[in-house]
Length: 237
Image 1 (tube, rainbow, N blue to C red):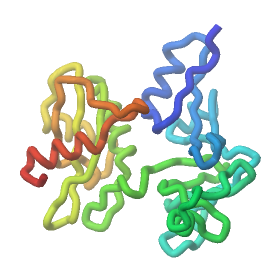
Image 2: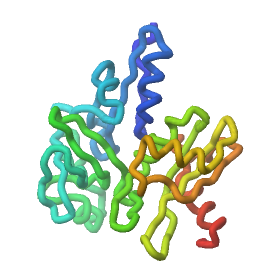
Image 3: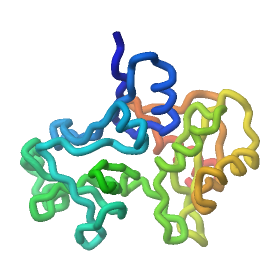
Image 4: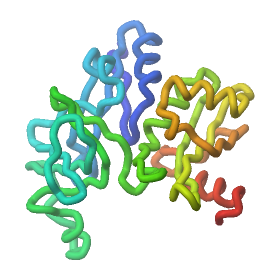
């Protein structure tokens, strides 16, 4: 019989983790994080550990070390967000014939993942977002995944994608495209999000899609397409 319902490629919304446990009699949720550069070996979690920490990607494999550093490369303490670095025996050696890429990717033997993350006191990894996808609003870094997870808590939202919208005063504002099963009022949605997000993380621009959101070949939501569509609607293209 089915004992595990797992997935990867992108963080699963915490509410979906809970739903898996409630939907199946015997199966438990599971997930993990890895990269092509790590030969798909990284972190993993499942069962009660995952239910207790539904935003986590789990503990690292025994063959990998993880570190979180700030913009200057200083190692950060438990709980602080920074760039995730990795090293270990499952790592690739280098990019073939790409000395420029290797110079940017490696720092003192550590590989720069390009992910913003943090580790908790039991060494569970929490991926916040890709550095390039962070929305920097008035100097505050907002992880799109956190906002998407909050949107997906709403019972009528089936899919959500969050992205940055250029703003003259704040640098960027937060925008989102959502696919819903029932019509939702914008103000009602923002009022709902007040209970799940800090006020500055609540999207200013909300687009509703009557169709499922577009996806790329890997199955991930096509965030860039949706962002470009939003920019065009706002005359920013």
